[in-house]
Every structure is written in structure tokens, then in C-alpha cells.
Image 1 (spheres, chains in turn red, orange):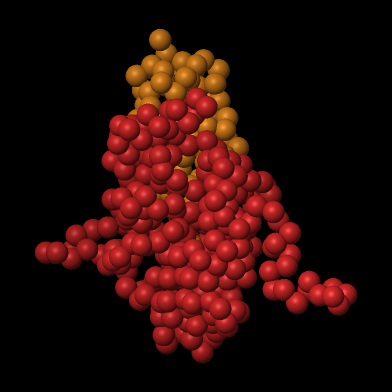
Image 2: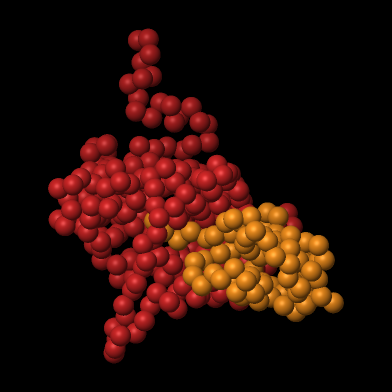
Length: 266
Length: 79
């Protein structure tokens, strides 16, 4: 044995965390929805952490304002290929064992939801609710992240626990109503106002998302944050708030509500 | 019986007192607070301690009582 032979193993330092299951991480099939700032950071973290089978879906193209937060985008990409394609290609360069497929449609058009995990890196509530409903239907664990300036949040959805829709209220409904207007027969126009964003918050949120993903895929969902993590970069704080099943939420049936109550009691 | 609740705007630390009937919901609370702070846009959640309150919960169901403090927290949606 040579001194420091262990440094020849790419994942040596990860193997030193006993509960991380690299075999399961390598095998997991993960859908990443969104190839913007959060998508770039999350995919970077996932590839470095050993995820090898990713599908990235996003139908946007790269613009210069993406370049302050997206590690894998370059100025020459602006106006060129789709974000998902560039992200898949450049992130694959980090590890030759990684396979990343790019899907350049909207997530609403995506078919074949056969994944072990969904990582949500979306920028609007409507797409988030669509993914949430698919995750609910197929019972796929869903880690969702979001940012707004120096604030961020991470929610882990694992059935029978509360989902994204369970944490919504009238302010979310108001935004949904505002952002979509019918402009004629069968035509819907989406308006998503640009919000403040910065790479430090994106990195914190994406890091927390992938940390939760590692727990789930390693079979240690019991270690997952017990609620929704709210990050406030202005104050330098992160708080986990306990969410509950909304009795009116259509994504849960009576049996799940009972299971959830049992889990709370235990 | 009505309960006087302190509502804190987590964005700037300002607060207001709201009187809730036992049948008033979390959505009712948000509507009143939104009117007071002129919040015509943006998404928020309501927390009591470490608990996120559900939109349809009444004050009674949420266990809100005289002197309680709840916070209105911005809910990010960007990516």
C-alpha cells in the first residue's frame, strides 16, 4: 500500500460519512426540473457527489443575465442552444461516468415519470405545482428549492407528508391568478416577473437541496429536515418550520392523512 | 370569543394587532395584514413559532389565543 493511496479514490472523502450509500447514489435516476441558477448549482453538486443518471428539463435559452449565477454557462452560449443542453454537456465533463440527458420541452409536456427522485429548480409556482402533482401521483420523493434575493427555501416532499400545495394560501392563489391570463381560445400566456437573485443564496439553497437528496437516495430519509427550511441571507439564519397536511389538499387521500397523524404521534 | 393577536411582518419587523374571531381563518388573517401593509403582490406564509399555519385553519383550530404572536414570512418562488 502506498502512502495516501486513498487520495486516488474520487469519492474517498464521501465514503467517510458512514450513512452515505454511494452505490445507491450512483444508481439513482433523478429528474432535475429547471436548468437556471438553481439547476446549475444543484447539478454541479449532484455530479460531484456521485449522482450519475440525471435528466434535466428546461425549454429556456441562455441570456446574459444568467451569467452571474450559472457556473456552466458562457457568454458565447447566449441565444444559442437550450439551457438544459449546455448544462448537460458541461456538467458531464466533471465525471466521465455521468450520463445527463437534456429535455427541451416544458415540464408540463414531460412524459414517463420513472424516477427515484425529483429535484425542483423552478422559477414559478405553476410549474412547481405541476411537478408537485406528478410527484404525488407517482409517489416520487420531491426536493423543491426556491430563492428570492437573499431569501430562499427548501421543502422535502415525501408521502404521506405535506406537499407544496399544503403550504399554499391566498397569497399564492393571487399570484397564480395574476400570472396567467387567457388571451384567446386555448391560449395561455405566462408572465413571470423577474425577481432579485444572487449566487450566494442560490448556492446555499442548492447545497441544502442536494444534501436532502443524498439522504433520501441513501435510504436515510429519517435524517431529512422535518419541515420547510427558510433561509434568510440578510440575517444569516436558517429556520425549519413544521408543515402540516392541508385537509383540503387534493394530493392526499384519507388513508394518507391517517398515516400522517400516526407518524406525528409516534 | 375574539383573540387579540400580534402579527409581525418579518420583512421589516413592523407589527399590528388583529382581533380574530374563533372562526376566522389564516387566509382571513393574511387578507387583513395584506391590506394593512399594502401588500398587493408577493407570496407569504404565516408561522406561529416553528409551525406553518394552514390556509383554511380557523383561529380556534390553529390554537391562536389572546397575546399570541404570529409572523408573516416572505415565501420565495424564484430559481
